[in-house]
Image (tube, rainbow, N blue to C red; front, side):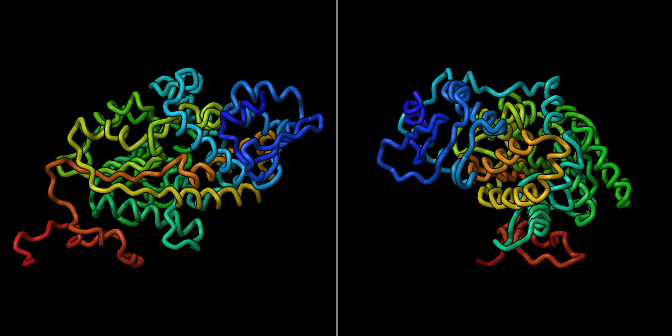
Length: 412
């Protein structure tokens, strides 16, 4: 039965050592790269029934151990499994039904968010950057530090939105408020930011007061479906994963309702190269309700309202690098985290971080930034030069001439 399971996973190149000393090797002749130990006989049956869900539980409990680098082990399994799925074609209905994500309805969304983001600000402070940014960074060069890369990401987003002093911006899902405060501080805009995490909203409001930005940034504890007002720009960074495909039309309705005729928008989200489901264990134990979309699925937000896509960028490898930084900080703080929670929690979250690195490195997950505007709005940059011009302290906003329409008689 275990050999059947391994075959279903694409027969990844690894040894499996059982509790009784028996060891299984790949049947395809591949040289094993590492070894998995199943410490208890009781661990075998749930692993056979649903490996994508129960491996994480068994690993967190210590019933399953991985000898070697955990990221490389998971990447090895992802690669083999992806190849096996490609050979098989369409996934089974049973597998889809078994791993379907939890509801993200208005009534359930708050519970989903609370389960992950309200674990405590002191916990996240131990391993995120100084600004508490919990989304993919943008590394202007591979040696950039995490703080530099997160600031570069926020500049990158603001430039894609072509923010100007005096603009009004609405943000759906604002985390600990870093981007909203950054936009107000560096680009002179006014921001209304929505979030349903109590811990994050409390932190963000305190920061706005401490930094003297409370008159320009308003943090609203409410669901994105209840956004009101009229704005020059809409932005969502790291929230779409929690919306659920079923509610994409509702999100599109919101954006259409609040964005002005010459408004701009950007959605930054974990995604997939083709439609599929989140890893079952991560969705059940770490990120309830999470469902990363394909680009085609994202168009269900934009196309019904004739929003035109201006730019699509994939930062997949940037997210792998971001989480590598988080993992190093998490490992350094593991003793404190264990004291806050327990060993099972530390092992679970380390598996989540390692699994995420592996997923981005192997292409199981993507990271999309999609910029858009109204289909008939011609106030768009002629080139992408404005995204990469050198940032001068105190002059972070985009020059007006870079945002203007090119002259009709420009010569060429």
